[in-house]
Length: 492
Image (cartoon, rainbow, N blue to C red; front, side, top):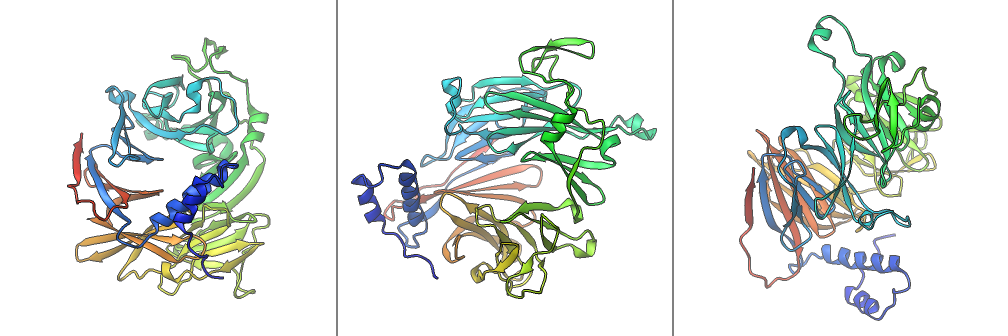
């Protein structure tokens, strides 16, 4: 079966105006996004993406759902308007108070929240001096704050459960120079502080101790699973809930008085902070373990599968897709007896609900992506996504979930200069729908991020000497519009 017939935008607009979709807000939203998708993918000159704004900064630039953040999240710019505009700029602060990491929280559906401000988006921010802030995403006002601790340096934020539970990870404990010179190793590698979001409530702070887990090199929390990694390439998975139930020393509540280790204070307030109340005293029950080169490990698909690279340097670029239930290699859907071992530049689970795996191979004839279904790997041909390393190479592949489009950044190297374009592909069939040239040159040795968000394309580039550039493209639909000079500004 080929691609479905293109929707008639005028007909959909007429039906919406007559109230055909008014009984179901979800239908209205899907219809609106279908109209936008049709406009975005028009190949005529009447609809194109235009570079409307360029800016440069000496500090990292971040993007999240229509907002561009500068100066360590202190300045927020909206990219939704016809031209980016500043939403807010927080007061200047010392280096010790700067925001190290941040996550965007958006109001959950169907929950009753204590304050009217809770129904608006917030930025959850971690500062260099170990404060956790909830900041209004539109005004920059601090709505909540929690002091974490003084016994370690917290540095990273991540979602354990998206929009519900966050994990705050500390920097790794290297110990003092004198201790290292004397051969004394610190038993605690790092700490993980875990919170329910809005209102903030503490689940607990967990220490990762080498006396319990062995010579562990890193650990993280994802979807209720504690993932522990080793230098040998071994990856072990444990249930965080089981650990909490077995090893929590004392339940702590934010804002409540507490006595810990001979010291009294209020949980979450300075200088007392939050004690480490989950200390594992014995090896917890193991859920799963696997050995993979460079600890590369992903879980996804339907039913559950995982992707690893065999733990040998000569196997770099080779990926095995295995069933989570019994570790068996998935079978190739074309040749039933051939186990699925793929040689590729990179491979990952597709973020939509199809169970597919995006697979970019090392040669032009490789088909992609593959699909996992009922324990089998079924190949589907996406010839238009093939790349030729001598002429054009893929750099970034992403999925725009609201428009159901696959976006691919391809770069062509011409002498010392690279030119890039962003291609939109039908997510279901892989058909090339539209190609957008990026006007700026593309140096493949630099770090690049490209975001495609509805009618916006944003390219963030990190150049040497920590110079960051941001290029904003927006969809324009007026062919008669006069060309305007691209605005530029410098941010210190």
